[in-house]
Image (cartoon, rainbow, N blue to C red; front, side, top):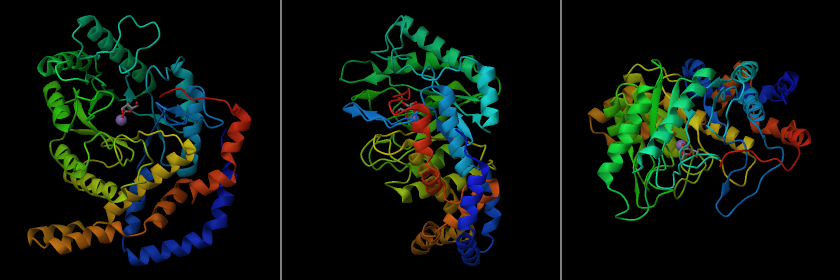
Length: 424
Ligand code: PSV
Ligand code: MN
């Protein structure tokens, strides 16, 4: 389904007076902040094709109604999100969960929904139907060369799918590792993985990037072959200039200082992309900003600082994507909330008085430095984001309109209440 434009216009008109008052007050308090509106309008966050259905845990899955059951329906859902917030103009596919059978048709659909294809993802963490060798003991790291070759061939096939859709990057996340001491020779696992990644790297088109995503643990519980940013960076450096590290917020050991990781990766020119989510314990797949909004702000503070220092375009310099799907919320509402939280953290980071912060740092004025950061963090930037959305043709209050326009009810009527999205 597509939302009738008039529904969005009527929604915005009903909130116009309230919005104008709030915006005027915001701009009075934050002089010059309207110069950030264009940056907010340009900033697009990729939606993964596996986040549109209700996620599950190993204990169960409680599917909601009206879930998309094929790629076209998933794209339609992302199109809806993008209509509402004008910030979700990209889709990220996981192969083979979502194989575009007819690339031309899919491209035409993407165009009609105003969507682009972001990084494409390979999957060697599950065995697929009719696959010859199993990934039970890893893929690119496997002691068996046949398994490694199969995993390399899969990644090369994924690149081909991506090329047909106009993607420009491949994300490799490996579940490879070991669950018990002694199971694996760490050095050999690293060397096998590196040799396999080199083969995939060699198959990258000239204008492509490869993202090496790390994760501290899970599904393996003793060692992971790309476990942290140091290991990812080691691979990326050994692979070459097209290889980068990808940071997924849920993939760190507890209390890791992610903002410092981001800062140093940017300094090295090796930060390639980002997976947003939130968590309290591990890789919990919660709505971005639901648990640690201050951390999200501090990360964006480093992103803006580092990207400006490296003269990178905020919108196109890195691949921005949400990576989460959980059990208890409407997935579309959840994604709208995640995008809003990301936009808020970004807008707050844009408000940081960097000149004053630099001066405070040079004088070792710790209290003032904190005051400066928290002044930005404590600013209610919602009117500014809403204005950016309004100017782009989106809704002033996306979740409110999602509910009042009865989008989920329409999707259930269209697709039924028993549908299940593919993915995890
Ligand atoms: C693994 O936890 C991960 O973060 C990787 O990005 C995968 O591609 C994604 O989740 C979906 O399983
Ligand atoms: Mn991820």
